[in-house]
Image 1 (cartoon, rainbow, N blue to C red):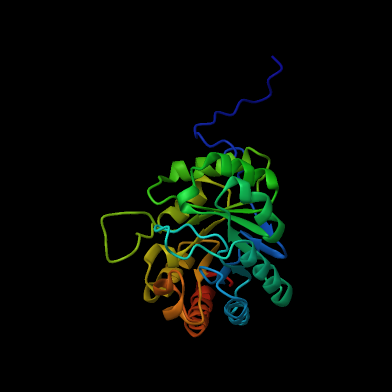
Image 2 (cartoon, rainbow, N blue to C red):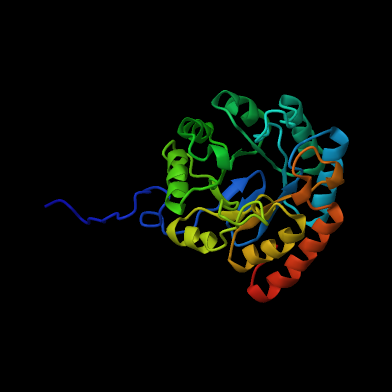
Length: 281
């Protein structure tokens, strides 16, 4: 008596799942909507190296059709001796690029103590693959109210990925975008293996938008455009792509970075493919 309805919830992710939220979520970052039907492209350098490098890249990706600017100010590197970013100076340069070109900024936050600082400059916080299960960081990012781009961990199952998103939503922040960026397998010709099936599966299980990172997934610039086309066909909500004006001189991940010319060619190809698929870039 007094109970109108009872809904059994079979999934461990209550807030991320579609059982209580059947309609897809649209995440707004600045003036850009992710998950509204369009294929949203975020592009920029793996690492912010200098003002000249960042501004040249931002101008080029905007001209080619990117809607958001990506760039790392704090970089998690396998070796402690590798270039690890410019820190706050890199954040300031990203903010300057946003002012000049009008592109909302997404950048990675690595540590709980840096969440406040990065939130001052960035429009969207990226949680990288290595931090996907850093639960304190997830909760802190959720409490900022900033949109969050959550990358799948290197060896994480889809359920673990969605439960990581659950940590962010549990703090009252529903503006989360999932990012498939490849998982570790026995294959050595690519940096990781892009799990393209994760895109429609995550969209089936969750109401959150899903984007793909073909740069990190493959580690080879020549594979980025084909995998971007695959993401489009798999009904991903967008891409995050690495672009550098001189990849051969990049301080990080030059082998997987597109030149501005190659990025423009990829965007043109995606527009051609999008029309018969009923998508728009």
